[in-house]
Length: 241
View 1 (cartoon, rainbow, N blue to C red):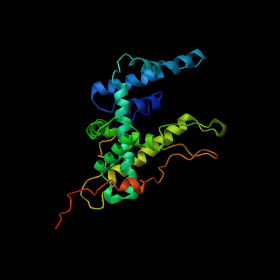
View 2: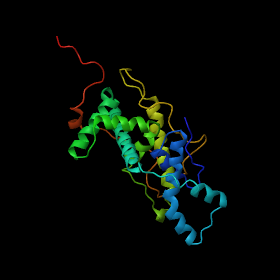
View 3: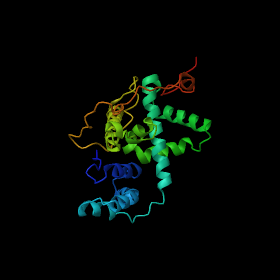
View 4: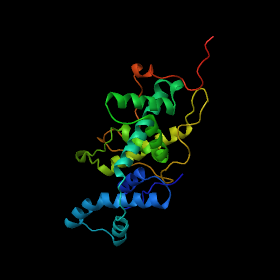
């Protein structure tokens, strides 16, 4: 497992870049860093214009990687969100019908949802997206489970950075679940491999303060009965006498 770049001057931007470009090869890592730099360009300009001070080292780390073109960014977002929604559905199945929980059935549910909403996508494209994003699937699933948003409530001292850290805790929960959960039949391995991006040793979310919103955990979510009827158990079909 490889460690998330939380030592970056802006760990949210660096983590999002990694979610979009999760490969460990030089090209992917260059694109991940470029995304972080480009994402931060306008906020950094405003910060400096307002008199903010940034160390030379941090400024170099943010800006020196911005020149890499990201012409596939839209596709990368689609890959990530598709993978996140699929793993979210897999997790839901383990709560509602563990004997039906599989990547195949989660993808089937995703197909059904896409057809209802008239959203383009096929089983083949969904599987391809998951292959590209397998090492960050837990991060995308956590993002999807929290309705694809981050929040802040300044009135109670709850800032965006706190919500991001609780998001990381949610993703870590899914990572541990995904690397350990086993189907009741034992017919397949866990949903995730051990080769996922992880938190640094000793990392912990902030201590929750009075009035802060509930975050940092995964709710007990499941699949509606009317959707479960479209699925079948994993494995070979039963023989008919």
